[in-house]
Image 1 (cartoon, protein in one colour):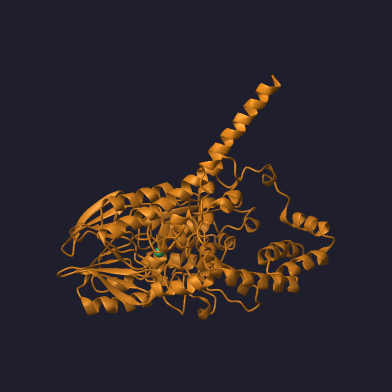
Image 2 (cartoon, helix red, strand yellow; image 1 turned 60 degrees about the vertical axis):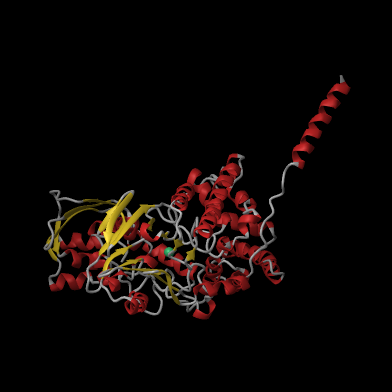
Length: 571
Ligand SMILES: [Zn+2]
């Protein structure tokens, strides 16, 4: 009997050995270095490239490219750069080739680096502006409810508050022009939208737009069948894709992204003109590159889900997940923008949300308590500081940085810890070849300087605010209610307008602002103004007291309630 049991055990071991011998170790790519980031800058040498007859792309003038399609009497522009100044520079180049008026502008998606130069291309021709039907919502969300945090995190990710010489390039373009050197936004909202697919004639060409969710949910690609030219927006460019962006983003659906690239592959384009990095010519080359790209995205998705199902948490998956060498070696998948590790966390949270599954993270200790206990564990505050300092001195910058979290939670104003943290961040930034993380570390280090100054890079101009929907402005008010200033308030207001039939009833009710887009009786104060004046006041561009005095805001009823309402909000 014992012999039989031993025999079975031996058989099991043999079987295991055999199955192991069939497994190939996944070989990964050599790690990148900061020198690779410097070499990547040559992608962004300024050039107006003629891709094929009548199709030109301006690369290197702004973070995103702008593309010209010539027609006989009119032209089409795809994406507009991110400011009026960069748009003007590019438009001058386009005009030198063909000064026809612009009949149509196409936004490949809502991001500011593609849309905020539109006013310049539209000068004198009032073009149709094509976009997906959800683009307007996403445009308004970033100008509205999310502006403070997206502006601040974008600033750090793009290194916009760093000295220029510290910004080598931004991975997908030379630099982010938005909010730099006083450049101005020139946004126009879309005028022609669609849901799945649209075909139209413009500038004498048949144009097809396909909804292609990927880098954003509103992404589209443009297909010019007569030239077999495809314009993929940001669903393809020459770096590993930004399947998650560290400035913060809604969930980017990787399966949708793969499907979108498959749609492109099966059209068999002969020209591929992305909205970042340089165009590619040749049917076979494009087919191979698109296949490699979609395989990398699918690999990250499928392997994250496989490891999730085995019970691994996001940290464990991010540590393990690397692209196999045949994908990681592709010059189109170098980690100059996104990374597989960030993407894996995105997939995990997209399917399972924030909880990593570990019971110890369900109700963790308050951060300050955890810090005090860690300090106690190492002896006292000074002994933990010594460990953090030693870690820095041996180039273990990450450990040093993590320990300064504890030290600063215990003593938030300690100058020598701030200095140590700053040095650790600079150490980490210096080692990074991914521009997003590199500038995030370096900007976070710079922020610890007393005289650090940060721009609100997404601060809209008065012109942009005037185009911004009043409905979105009302949404923004809700997320600016300060509970401490409004928990004992119960105020009903009515807003009506001199230049539109709209009206809004607002109920500030003990820390919550309810907004209804119609007239409800019972308001204690009624406010009448033009839509633009109200938008300017609510966004802080115009002052409330001055508007009351000069009569651009007319108030009936309780002025005290009106002031009480405004004093409950940020600004
Ligand atoms: Zn972009």
